[in-house]
Length: 210
Image (cartoon, rainbow, N blue to C red; front, side, top):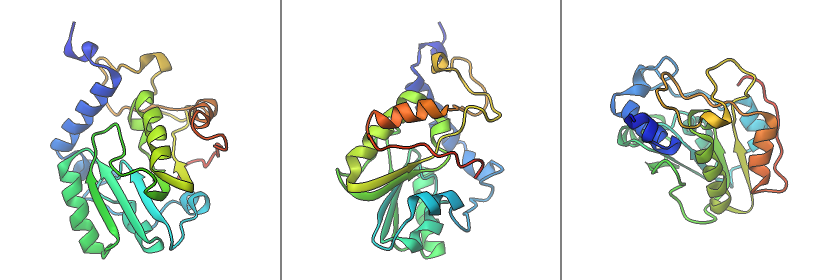
């Protein structure tokens, strides 16, 4: 049996993404060429997250802060985490370059949110959950609930299963021999089930392409 078939989905994901970061995945990919920083957050984020100057915010899987920087001027503080040292160090450089003095970045372990209980009024993710197995996503939803303050809110982005892409089936979470981006589509019912396992008021909104 090969190493790939012996790995769990979580182990596979952590190893694969760590290796990609170590090889400079972000600065050479088309979307993030030359460590691109977005000029503004997605329109749907402004509508559904509705950040305020009083918010203390956390981004799950923040990369090098490419979304944190345009959000930072609208909130009190914004924190992010990712799994590779090169992303953390690049984020610090980008925060300084763009004057995001209220932004900070730290290392995560790939399965938990590295901040204390009830630290944030807003937790969000953008284009992250499609890149990791469902088991990890369910864990991050539970972790989001842990770090949210009472009355806080979460805005979590999922890729629709009806979009184009090499989506695995629920039974194919162990990606033996997988090539290319891990691209895990979710149906609306799957998202609803995952969210409502933690929050009774969780709702699903179709935002289309962002």
